[in-house]
Image (cartoon, rainbow, N blue to C red):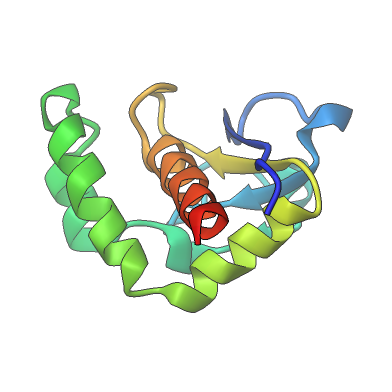
Length: 125
């Protein structure tokens, strides 16, 4: 598998032609935005952290490193969702959409890291 082009972006940011396939990866629909305004091809709730993990994390930067350890363990239990995202990313750029205010510490960033590591793992085998 060639290297993937995955980025994370706030769902409230303007849609750009360079976004490629836009996929909303929040468990809860973002406030104040209609489906059409997201530009999302898919809403993959299953890719989001469980409610328990999301609430525990609470976008607390002090919990970010631990979140980045726990979330991949949840994703390992969702092989169909992971496969779907990897297949989309193999076709071109994927933009993972999220609604959190923190642009550096959120599930879309962690998910992108996870997908990139899975793709590298596949190349090694």
